[in-house]
Each structure stands twice: as C-alpha cells, then as structure tokens.
Amino acid sequence: MSKSLSYLRGISGIALLGSAGAYYAHQWRQSTNPFTNSSQKHSASGNSKMTVDQKFETLFAVPMTCEGCVKDVSDSLYKVDGISKVEANLKEQMVRVEGTAPPSAIVATIEATGRDAILRGSGTSNSSAVSILETYAQLKEERDQVPDHQKNREVRGLARMVEVSKTVTLVDLTIRGVEPGTYRATIREYGNLAEGASSTGPVWKGDLTGQSDQKSQVRGELGNVEIGPDGRGSIFLDRPFQVWEVIGHAFVVSRQGETDGKPLENDDNTVVGVIARSAGMWDNDKTVCSCTGKTLWEERKDEVKNGML
Image (cartoon, rainbow, N blue to C red):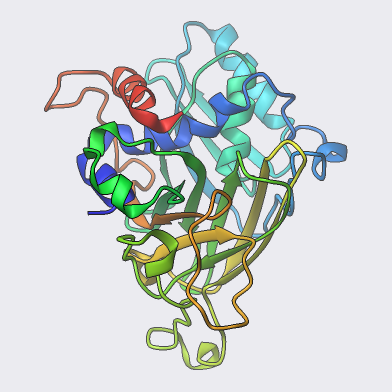
C-alpha cells in the first residue's frame, strides 16, 4: 500500500481536513502573509495566479473567545483579495467565508492573527477533494523495510479541489521544500503509487468521461507553478472537470519533461499523492472523534506529530 493511501485510510475523519487545512499555515506562520497585499502576489514565494472568477464557500474551525476575536478575524479576512463575505460564529467557533480567494490564503490569514484554522468543508456535498503530496525519492527497497508509521513522509505539498459547476473545478495548490524553478502540475491516468510517480501512468486525458467538446483536451494538464528561492510556490486556477472524475487518480507536481514518453522518475523535487474526497460545507460537524474521544484540535496535533509537518 502506498504511503499516501495508507495514511488517508488510517487518519480519522475529523482530522483529515484539519491536518491538511492547517499544514501550510503552520509552515508559513513566521512569514509575511502574501495574500493581503497585491504587490506581494508574485513575490519570492512563487505565488502565481491567486484568484478565480466563480465564488464558492469555505468553512473553518477557529478558536475564538470573545467578540474581539470575531472582529479581529473578520477584519483581517476582508483585506484578502477576492473575499466578499465573512460570517464568524463565536458560539460554534466557526468562520464561513464566501468569495474567490483560495482556501490556503484564508488559512494563512487567520493564522497570521495568532489563531489556528482548520478547514472543515468547502463547496457542496461530494464536490470537494484533497491530495497530500509527498516525495518518493527513497528507494523502494528501503521503504519496504520500514513500517508505515515509521516512514519519513516528506510531505511537500497540498492540493485542494472545489467543484463550482458541472464544468469547472477550482484547484488550490501549495508547494514547499523543493528547488526553485518552473514546475508542472498534472493529474495522472492511474492512482498507483507503488513506485511513486513512476507508476502513475501518463497524464489523464479524461476523454472517457468528458463532454463532447472536451474530447480533444488533455484535462489532466493543470498548468505551471513557479517555485521561488525560498522553495515555496502556489497557484489557484480553474479546470474543466468534475471532482468525481478525478477521485482515485494521482496528482503530480514535477519539473521533469515528458517528451520522450518515459515514466516519471522519483526525485526530491517530484511530489505525488492520491486524490481523495473531502467534506463539503456542513458535511463535517464533528468536534470529537467517536473512536479516540479526542477533539479535532487534539487529533490535528497527533497528525502533526505523525509527519504532517
């Protein structure tokens, strides 16, 4: 079983989006928030296109103790390009955001106020997905000799997807810890990570499930993301597919060319993960795990210890 797949099966339901949603915000906590000042959108962190045209909703769990917290979080979010509506509920400890800003920008902005933020849902039911991206540079023989819970996960990226119509899905991709340069993001034909990126097959064409006017497109070609000198980059874009079409496929970010038709090689700068369903708005209202009795914040801390950071 691949590292990503075994991890996604083992993680509790309330922690999956919690760990994923907070992952990059914790990595960037000590950095300047790049999303509240338009002059920084193409900074050294490699931020590419960071707004889209279609609005969508996202829901976040945020610890707030008073109306001052509500105002602080709301005021900060309204400074982010693309956010049109913020509703913070002190009693429920939830913040609902509407607009065209990427979830990663929202999480980073909330974290910049000194509070944690966990993405609890986005879009409607069955319209969201997530992929945790890792390197598979370690030799397969070495990986096979180490139990899954002891493996160095080497998480380098996170891709969130939200379907906003029958023909458009938004992709919010963030990458860190790789060398500077231009990287290519693709969805692959298979979700087989037995050999990392090498076993994911060619780029997904989507011609079997696409509409008639999409048959000639290679819908798995998502675009390029620029990685800055600090090893970080992000991009937010829309693509012509539905979430159900890509569930179980692999998501790969690499700077390797594929003109020779050979499989991708696993190296320190190629990251891959399986695309899995995630919660829609209001689909995930649990605050305590029925299996462990832990709160979502305790679950998130456990997953951080297990390799999410």
